[in-house]
Image (cartoon, rainbow over all chains, first blue to last red; front, side):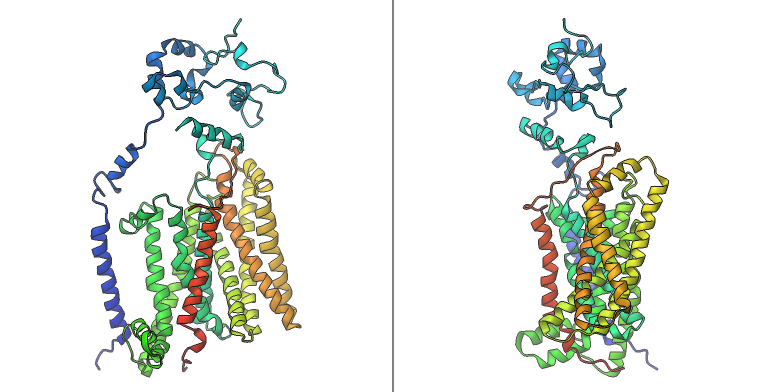
Length: 154
Length: 399
């Protein structure tokens, strides 16, 4: 007896063969040129990632000019907080040297972002004050130097 | 970052409560990632209902067999679109398909889809419709004749022997299709369940919960589509069909509810270090979508109604409207479940001490209008498919 192959199957096999070869051809043209250059990703994506403008200069760039602040910071608890945490991105200021290109935050609200009472935070890790009670009418900077917060101003 | 962006960061910080890390302020996954598992769930669920009829020979469900298959196909064609419109580089979306890697959970998705779409769903529909398409290609004139000719792939043999093979091969595909549907949606659950850093997601039960909620939503959708089609075609709704689908919906909903309940009980009893924040999450930010939308509206009310419908067999009109309402409520419930998983999982901080909040945008590639578009598009595709391949005009099968 002759082995019967249903016509549906042969036709589908042809359709699948066409589809798979089309896929392989497309794949040949569509895989990005730099794919696999360094690993299983498009090598040129590294260039893409390097393209965005740099905004943060890094702490060392600040200390290159502001040695005095580095000395102050070293002696107190804010030593671990990098400059740009409070002053914002500083690359523009590093390049221009203009005071207008860097933030100098003042005001109780700003300090309160970290230091206002919050039961979720450990007091041993972040010192907390109640903004509604602690020297209400005064600015933090009148008594504290943010670079050396525990050395009170006279 | 310009100073005004820096200011923006402080502005959105006011939406945060407690202590959160900077990269947790903005949610990375928005409403489109909610829509995505919802749509794949509908696909898997609708397909499983169709398979029930085929493999277990549930004769009553015959009128919904093709509807379920075509529903699954229309939603599957759109399933990946929410992901692609969510990407900020959508023109590169195809790269995931052509450069697969075994260590990337997302890249494997391409193959799951190709397998499910090409090998399972299209083939099953093709084998089922081929005899009818041959007849239609002879009856129709002009362009439609050509369209059906192409759709038959030129296989015009309608001899009993060839028809027997259509049924046989279609059956094999269905049998292969059931585990495939399970894999497709179980895999969506796996994507969340395998993120071990997130205690709201990371549970081995996640794929199973996703699968059962998928079945719930797919069955409800087919019930709804069947009623809507009957309304537009002005034909009588077969109550036996509704009762049978309703019975399946009832059982699967019980399973789904039990599994999700077990997951929560386990979480409550274990009370790991993440539990405090999860307790705050579900009783606060997720209260409406979890307890009200998912629990009460989407699960308890449909469960009680379906249980009631198991023995209430009197007024036909009442039963029909109850089934209509139940199917809509269940769909709302499953949508809320996706919301609770996707959005809920990103609202609390990895520090377990704070929350951020999610503001749903209206416009843009990641907004709710876009999400609505991806939910409406499959309905349009389904309408087209029902016009192209009307199940009610099929050539009756000889047993």
